[in-house]
Image (cartoon, rainbow, N blue to C red):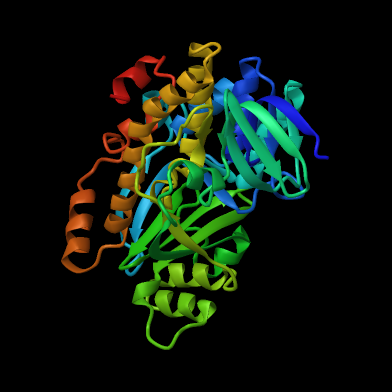
Length: 405
């Protein structure tokens, strides 16, 4: 007979969003159990960009210094033409940026962020981390929920948070909006030693981050791990692939073969054997039902073009914990208020990410107009990112109140 264990708070998913949520609740004195499907807790992937809206939360959670120990702080974010290598526009991310938003923009290894949050969860004494817990079934119960796992274990909880990603089983139960939407774009990701780029002049922005954009494609490059490695993300529209190139490695080469030498050389160094389809969903309400709610990609999956997937999950964590604190003894009300508070913000980011994807990949006259308009920006003009980077999910700082409107 299966023994059912009880939890005050139960989180499904031990990724960045799930652990951040557990830590935020623990900082409020709540006991949390986290179920992770994989045999061990960890993150797959390479580089990760974190803007001030993420740093603001990580600082509150007490992990910012650990996260940034080996991080790289670019002085500029630069947009360049992938075909000609000409600069299009840039954003200063040093002193003026710090003065405006209170935190620097930084890039780090995804595993470093995950590890810092995991260690903080373990050190809290309030978070129990259980691996190899493949959730098969979630059942709403009066005043809570029941979760059943493939190994025969079962857990009852007063409050269930599903942070189990794009293909969340719990979302299917709550919203029933079918499969995620395929944008047609794919991404190849990985790191290379910084010396490997030396053949074509090294990293074009050694103290910054560069995004090379072209018709239906782009390449992102930035240092990670104290500048020893360069993270690269190559993205393109598979619908533009030349006929007869079904091999995914050959597709990557063919799409980028007409780019400038710096871009073509960087792409040639990448792993050609694995890629990820870029999927998202249109914004939908209904994350919360009774004592069950969603967080991160389970609630609001988005395309990568604003580098805000992890950032929005991190914002969710403290917004949810604050809502629980504001509704003592009433999880259903807390979860409903959390969704209401977060929906408008995350919906805007989801739809803006789609728009920026179109802007980055535009062709022909549209690209000429984009370049002409963006080239007129001053490097310290932050109007384009004020609402995004200045947001405080608690709404408790003057900057947050001003920019979250």
